[in-house]
Length: 334
Image (cartoon, rainbow, N blue to C red; front, side):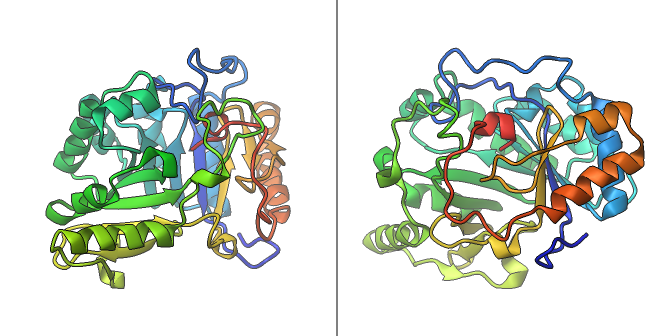
């Protein structure tokens, strides 16, 4: 499937739930958000049917998100069913890793290929302040479990925020002794119009990828360590996103930078997003959505395909610096 700008659309992010076992300050208020009705949430068999139609149209890569996708009831069986769909080449999952220690083996056996783990700080006190409910130890144990069962690659995603004063070098050095792929993501005010962002962060907290990379190199030099060097293609992790990858000499992993604000990558965008309540979004930064919920419950496979074609035809050329969305990230799908 190609959109009107010639981009090949082969990647779909599926939000399994808007619920989460954390209450991160930039995503939810302390009491959580109003939960979607069970009637509105897509059932597992509906997700499988939509994915099967999508695969027939050319979608080959699936990422499962949330909220926190591992709190979704029946997630292991759902992955198994998606894995069995002809045309689906790769299934990945974005998680906060709180439940990964217990679930990693079953997820791998069900057919999950890759995991992205969200982790914004290595300071245990700050971690609990940001997540309100979480303990850093649980995430670190989840990372260990992901490596032990053989997920490849295992990527760590950190949103860079100026006022958090994050230790970027310590994050980057996680890639040296283990095959971890550390990615730094520029802070984006997604959901700023939803009222769910309680972080107090603003435009002044955005740190460009270039500044983060310079800070890592400066800290490395101060400690007598080598600087990052650009990774060769055969050293980069498997993935379908826009990260620019570097590595320390002889490191087992890489350090990546994702720059949605300072360096747009819209011209390379190959994805659609399916929300937990069955809305298809052509662009993260746009509130335009197309209803698959009605099509999957009362229509034919051709009706479902028609929604995909409509959404792809409406995919914009870029986000044109639009920030803030009516839905928060937990409702859109991270």
